[in-house]
Image (cartoon, rainbow, N blue to C red; front, top):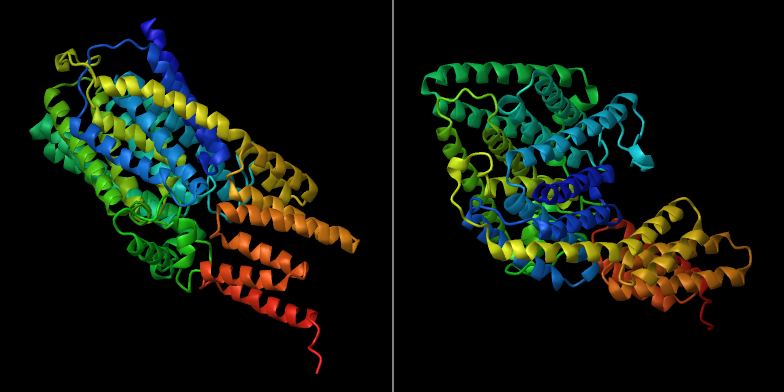
Length: 591
C-alpha cells in the first residue's frame, strides 16, 4: 500500500510535466490549467502517504520559500486588475505544489530520476519538432497548434524559441550529469547521451542568442563542478580531470562553431548588434514602472499596461513582458519581492553546494558506477545557473513549463539527501509536519480552482480562434457563453466586441450594421469596466463610436487610449483619422 501510495502521485506529477509540454508549455491559461489540475490532484494524493523517517530539508530553504511565496501570493491577490494576476497566482501555486512534492515526498534518487527521464524525453520531442521547423522551413506544430511566422527559428512544442532555449539548457545540464554519474547500463548511457546532444543541437536551432550564451555559462558551471567532484573524490586525479575538461570544452566549442558556420541565419542572428535589441527599451520601461511603487510594486500583471505607458519611442511592439524576470519582479512586486527572491536563490544555491561537498566526501575513493546524488546535484546546480542567467534577458519563469521544472530542481537543492538511498544519513527526523499537512489542502484548492476556471478559458480561446478564422457570428456566440462561465476576463469581451464589429461590416443593411455596432460597443464597455487601462478596448470602442456617429464619446475614448500609451505612433494616426472623419461627417455651422 505504501508503495502504491507513492506511485500514484508520482505518476500524476510525471503526467503533469508531459501535459504542460504537449500544450505549448502552458503559454496560455487554457493550456496550463489542465496541468495545474493534475498537480493539485498529486498534492491531494499525498494524504494517503504514510509518514516515514527522513532527513529534514534545509530550514533556511523552507523559510525563504515560505516567506517569498506568502508575500508574492498576497501581493498578487490585491492586484489592480484581478484577471491579469490570475496567471501568476496559478503558476505560483503550481510551483509550490511541485516544490513540496519534491522536498517532502519524492526524496529518493530513483523517484527523481524518473522525472528527469521524462524531462529528457520531452527534450527529444522538442528536438524532433525543432528539426522540422528549422530545416524544412514550415510553421510546423504538433497537435494542430498554430505557430506564428518565425522563419527557420525553432520553437519545438512551445510558441517561443527563447522559451525552448531556456528549457533545453536545463535538459542538457541534467542529461549530461546523469550520463556521467548515474547510468549503469551501456544502452541507457547511450540513450541519455543522445538525448543530451539532441538538446544542445535543438538549442542552437532556436537561434536564441541569450539561450546559447547562457547554455555556455551553464556548461562552464557544470565543468567546474565536475572538476571539483573529481578532485574531492581523488585529489590525484586533478590533472586528468583538467585535461578531460579542456579537451571536452574544445570539442564542444569546435562542434558548435562548425554547426553555426553551416547555418547562415543562425550566424547572422548571433552576429547582430545587441544594442538594437528591443530588450533595452523593455528594461527602461520596467525601471520606470518600478519607480512609481518601489516598495510593494504595482501589482501582478500590471506590466502589460504600465509597460505601454512607459514604453520608449523605439519600442512599438506590445511590451507584454519586460524580457527580464528580475526587473519584472521588481516592478510588479517591489523591493520586498526582489529581496525575497534574492534570498530564495542564495539559500538554494548554498544548500546545493554544501550537499554536493558532503555527498562527494562520503563517496571518496568509491568506484561505484551509480552516483545518483552527484548527478542530480550537479545537474540541478548547472541548470539553475544557466536559467538564472537566461532570466536576465528573457521571461522564462513566466512560462509554466520552465517555471515548474525549476520548482522541481529547487526541491532537489532544498532536500538533496535521501535516507532511503543512504541509510547512513538517516536522522530519524520527520519532515515538517505543517508542510505535510498543508500540501493535500493546497492541492485540493489548486485542482478545484483550475477545474472551475477552465471552461471559461476554453470557450474564450475558442472564441479567439473563431475570430481569427473570420467566423464572426460563431465567435460572438462562443464569447457570450464564455462570459457566463467567467465574467471577469476582459479579453473575452474584446473578442466578442471584435466579432460583432467585424460582422457589422458584412451586413448590407444600414440598420443591421448599426445594431451590431451597438452590441460591440456594449461588449467593449463591459471589458473596460474590468480593465480600464487596455488601449485595445479603448481604441476599438472609439472606432465603433465613430461609426455610430457618437463623436464626443469617441473623442474621449481615443484620448484615453493615447493617455494609456502616449508613445505608440499608430494611436496618433488613428486619432488623426478620427478628426478627419468627424470633420467630414458633421455639417458646417450656418453663417
